[in-house]
Image 1 (cartoon, rainbow, N blue to C red):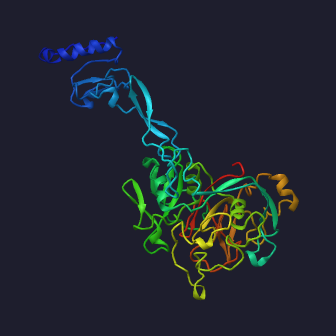
Image 2: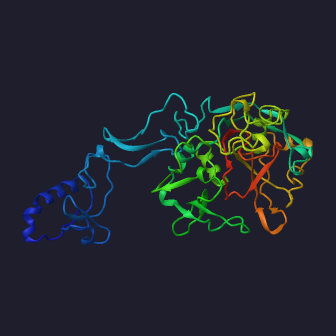
Image 3: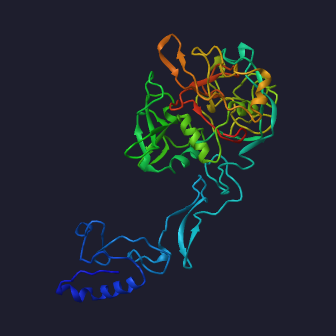
Length: 453
């Protein structure tokens, strides 16, 4: 029941209309007032009450309902109230709407309508099916494989940790035709809760033998017990690749300079790449998924286009005169069509930027033996992993050459594909790095299907 305080004589006339409204509201179970007093600010009300500025009295806050009554006394009709988010926030523009009062009932009102087709590498779920950039022009669908070649027994193909060569099976899957662009990545990172984002050095880096720079950090914990995850390295003007970096402006991020929105995003950690792909309804590709797309069903190709050596027309690497860089910077994610595979137009599987793989790397500290490749007999891979291997359960450390105090990575993950500055064209070269670190030559793309994660 509503309880009222005694009003002062001078305020009775002025409040008579308010009292009548309160009595009527109480009969409609509008809200329960623990007391009634004049106010001009919340500080004049008792603990748990607020000042209703439109009415000039203190009240207990009450949530608005879709019932034709102004429950929260804010003079906003039910039809104009915003009742909060609804839908599944999976990164698509149509998957999340707002609850509105329509015809006396709450309904989830879409914020955008589905488009008839996906626009590639924009980071938007245009057709609102819960998966980003998955149209026919955006991905290549690859059928089940039973003889994907992994590794090599030829030392000239890699760095000594590629043996033994073995064949693996792989379930059908789809892989993005393009590396993730700056535009797509910005659409994702700017959708994150800005209250959870900060900038600084990782407080608990995986590798304590190396120095870390300044990162965009995302708090996966609480304000009282933060758990900061490094997403993007923010560079200084003297750092390599500075012109390719992102910057923060207010609560949002943008490219450092205009005109690079369709270049592949770099300076991302493996942790950020994994999160982006998951939010897009996808995942990072495994090494097996990468090799199947790059070298074919039976591994007959050394490179996506065939066995001919890289040229500047096929790959953005250092294939110019005297091994000079072809461009010296990443190119647009849809470029160099002479370098795509014969199975479908997948751009830059070799060259442009290295790409984060799903897998950890388990080798000896001097990376002269691959412990994972040697973990089972050659004929056991398809038996043990009929849908494809996911790699070792944890990465091993790799030492910095001639420096016993420094490790290149401690729980090594890796990237493949070579980058715009690479002058070593061996097809099996990897780039090792801890999952919470980044550099100007590593980007990523996403995949779906394949082995169940």
